[in-house]
Amino acid sequence: MPSDLTILIVACDPYLAGIYGRKFELDGWDVEIAETLDEGERKATRMRPAIIILDAECAVDISTEVARLRSLPTILKTKIVVLAQMGDRDEIEKARMAGASDYLLLGHFVPQEAVQKMRRLIAEK
Image (tube, rainbow, N blue to C red; front, side):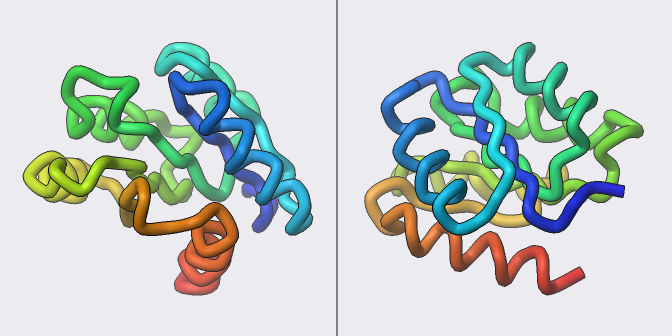
């Protein structure tokens, strides 16, 4: 069973991952960062995070990646949140249908708001 405040951020932009990672750490979260989807899958399997934030920019097809992560037996209860651009509405909907729990729109959430949203998502258990 994952700890309530564990998060894995999968983002191919280390700067973006670092900004979000620092905000979550300051809020008391245990944070892991992966820069590739394969690395993210390995870390997710090992750490069993409560939440995975998955940057849509890292995937050719974000819904396929969400479905692949969702199929891993070790993270069945993990919430998967897609981080996407505003113009990716169709991709976001496909990701939700593939098993994503929620999404964050880049430019519409500052990192502190993302932290608050993730706390609410965990509370929805």
